[in-house]
Length: 182
Image 1 (cartoon, rainbow, N blue to C red):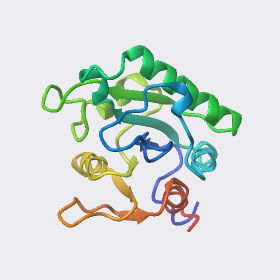
Image 2 (image 1 turned 60 degrees about the vertical axis):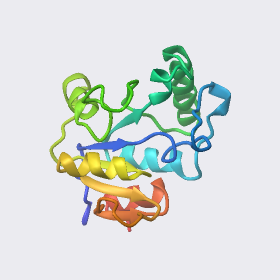
Image 3 (image 1 turned 180 degrees about the vertical axis):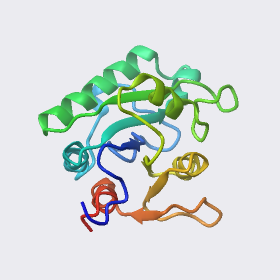
Image 4 (image 1 turned 45 degrees about the vertical axis):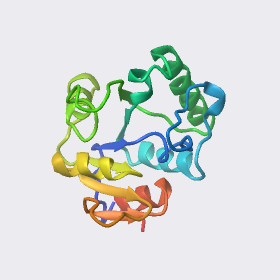
């Protein structure tokens, strides 16, 4: 694909809440499967990545586990529902990785490299070289920048936020830009 910023066969790392599905209110967490709502265009965006083809890996901080507001079982149910909704729309993820820790306890919590490095070790065909990171928060952009990935911020950045390679209104616009369709 001419003009693609994510070469076919490379990896698209995606944040989950606020990127693929609607996030919870500030200070709250998605803790039950029935709370999962795909954002408009998210399934279509992931289908485009699947056809590109790209590996699609979700990397999500889930501090609610460390805070005792949800369990690993809650998270598994939420992720299963996400996969179910995407599959019903003809889209698939290659992996969902999460960090259950509090800030400062690990290197897997974004913006740390742990989840990305783990994906490279555990998910067949995933590599950091030539990969992209798409998310709705400054921490997503910071994580991608630290690893030398192409970064896309969903929504506008705030003063002082790390600079992304591109800002898009939503995941579909981000994927169109990454794949050279816009």
